[in-house]
Length: 314
Image (cartoon, rainbow, N blue to C red; front, side):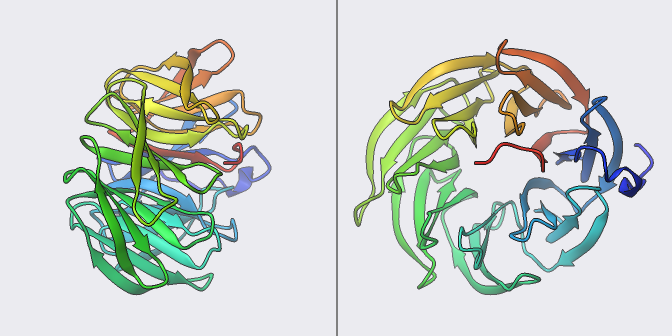
């Protein structure tokens, strides 16, 4: 393991790329000019996902089996603090109005709703769910949190005002990430146990399954391309990334990425895709124009979340 050291002296450099090594309980900090791993930061057990705080001053790493959150400086990678007592935070998301902080308890089958005052999360309600809550999407009005149930093959809608489950509906096998379109009524759900993305209309009182987009086996995580017109989905088993047109809801491009591609981020100029290769212990860097992996960086075991401050807007 690399010796842990501060990057504060390099604050003027481009912000680092962070990769969560879920089985090593560390974060790899990668310098994006030379594409070298500068250090690894210890975290709690099983860091899987990460999210920027509303004030953009902290990057939160959710340590699901460590029941904790590690706050990092997104520009320097310094550890700011650790918050304990956050039970099983597998996936996490802030509501667009920045008042709610929601976590999915993957191993303990619950969703936690926290109020966020800008400093500390305060638990409001713990809601029992189906089996293995996986990913969260919150609508643009900050009224509903949609959560996929990986092992009971469901999608649920949580009413944030009443802290209750509004509805639940069946999905295909092993639903994972969720992506909401700007129309406010359409959700895309990746099916890790299948070969594509289901499309749900959630405008009414009950959801409607309206289609499926074939992408590749193991459809898992989404990342907006940052152009307002398309979204990427990783196909872990097929070892590909698909680009979906948000107007036609069809695949317009496919990029081969080895090693079980999982989470993604997009460079600020929209030209480069950063992908964690889950089974290969690498970060893969994809040039979108040539559709090729142009470099890979060695990281820890089971790399999952990836993020950099210098990214395209969602």
